[in-house]
Length: 257
Image 1 (cartoon, rainbow, N blue to C red):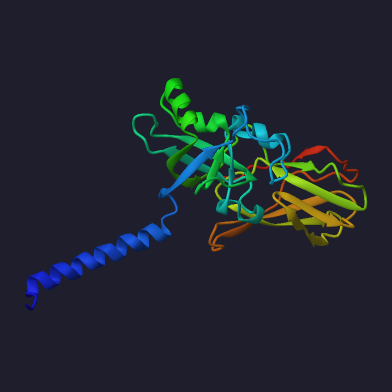
Image 2 (image 1 turned 30 degrees about the horizontal axis):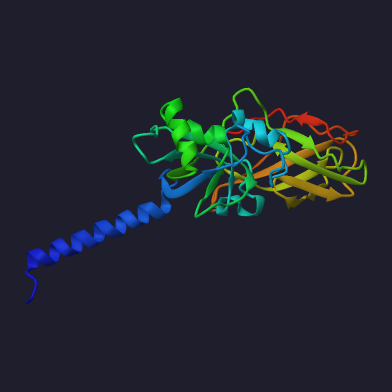
């Protein structure tokens, strides 16, 4: 039986709406994505100090200990330092706001995108009793979205890796990554002649170079969105001193929105 003109037009309108919704879901950076989350099995409320991002003990305490390991979102280290709003879906236990976590480690559980610190896992709940019930479950259904990282009282900071060997080898980790973009490239430049060297991401959030430039060093960081369409170089106010030392931290003097 042939469709009437009215029915055909209604069908076409429905198809157009469905296509528009599908396109919006693919391009909507603020939309939530459904997944599952587990928590670290140990009794420590905070994260781990041996995470794959290379943050060390800082990775357990940043953001008040509201941190997480990630599987696909780790992205071979590119996802280190990124922030996500994660909220569980059981309305009896879960709050509307959920928890904001920082990626500091790589890991996966049973069909999960996140392994949260116990502190962050409990913060998805409405009450302390609800938090205990969530922790007892171990794995819960969640939805998440990427959000901007904000550290109002902290500038982006450089931590020189303990394995660095002045002046032959330099490695460092970037602390307090801010905003909603990834750090996709890092350069070190001599401040006298502006000769720059592109660094390697050895693993996680650790950037390294052999035979680093000499003298005071100017840092350049390339911030990119996940599609690579919006990129900008950020040059800190403060330089890494000429006599940099392994284990030291240096304030860059900049924040990024």
